[in-house]
Amino acid sequence: MINSKKMRLTMFAASMVAAGALTGCFNDKSSDPSPAATSFSSTASLGALFGAVCTVKDNVGATLQTYNTTQTGKSDVALNVAANATYPLIISCANNSANSATYYDEGADADLNLGTTVLKSIIPNAASLPQVGNDVAVTTLTSMAAALYESLPANERNSTSAIGSLENVAKALYPSLLDNGGYANLLQAPTTVVDSSAVLSGKAGQYAAVLAGLAKVAKDNYTPSKTAAELASLLGTQAVGGSLDAAVTNNIVAQTKAYAQTNGDQGVKDDTANDSSGGGTVDKPSSGGTTGGTGGTGGTGGTGGSGGQP
Image 1: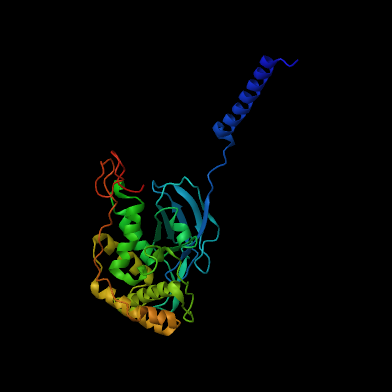
Image 2 (image 1 turned 120 degrees about the horizontal axis):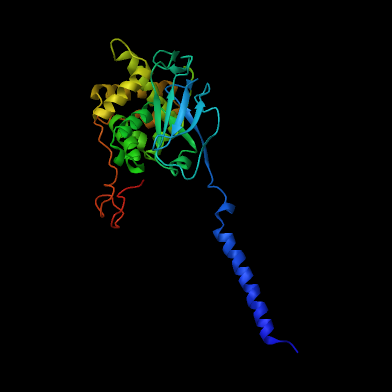
């Protein structure tokens, strides 16, 4: 005869062992896989920037990776950012130790030394990367946005103000770049121009035409003339001050249209034909609220909410 009490005890013990095994699976942190890293690349362009040394830093200034740029302005290695990285990220590209980094300057129609210019970009959050095909632009416009972002108080630097910095620079200088994509259009890699024979198409081509327009204005509208790299530094300073020279922004649009007519396909010619300047006023970006607020502007609605996206 089967001992029913003994059977019940045996089944209970077995169930406890199984439960313990499951609990161990869920609670043993050492067995959890590390958060997946995000892999991406970058494209640095004034024209194409070659031989620059670039760093990726998080929002608290920790260096995540260092890399060099190739002849087409691309990063020479895959860039990897951990899933728990503190966004926004800042990319900075500067001359190398031999002072030999060069870029193609459409105004001079020649390869010029980068000099002391530091070209920057800003990645607001991890969601920005797939929006740009995991290839992040480092250009005059992203550098202006990074300068604007970095001028904010530390408690106002977050993903919301990073996006606002990109948007506000475009609105001041070349608003149509925001069409059909918003701020991500400034972060998406432009066509890299390495000589005067470049043929431009699509949104990347329009972006490249704007960068060419900047280079043309640097050469033709300043006395003494400037390089595209020098103009990038100047415009970054002006963006922080809240105002670009309206005459310069108008000339950039005019030079962009002219370059598009020469080097763009029909789509780029059509897309730039009716473009106009934003007038030069660079608004301070909003951070989405005040940290520690109780549901103020941009807040999450919860008491003590952060008021903005970190």
